[in-house]
Length: 154
Ligand code: ZN
Image (tube, rainbow, N blue to C red; front, side, top):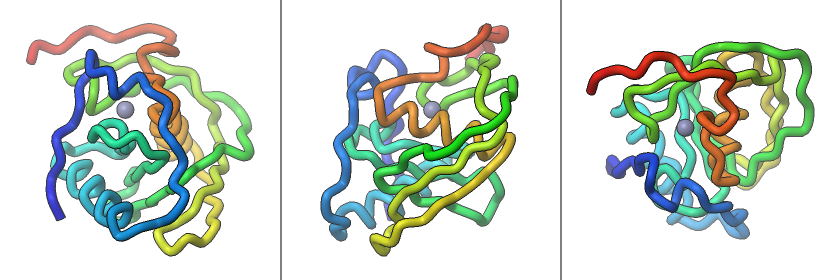
């Protein structure tokens, strides 16, 4: 595994629409491993491939330590309710903002074995799913933030 460089706001790669994965190659599996390592090293709870410069529809999420969701070509298939909470992003260091997201989200994706999986989550997991999937379409949470919170000095 290798720790990858996290792209920061201002980098064009964060604004591109990612392509689906057609075939789950060893390269994609390595990408998943490296993304998880990179997310953990940065103390994040999610990471999308464009954040490490790869324009593929791949995300990893770990809102509960020890449970990593590896999602390939993910699609949100159901949402319910609403929540407002503070959100941050490893690509937007030192800032946070309040976003409005669904309270419950169900996502359908392929796992690393190419099997279709469905994951349902609420609260933080629901928010993380929405946040990471937005990255795949070149969107950042700051685009939809209800308001930004104070900026940290970093
Ligand atoms: Zn992010």
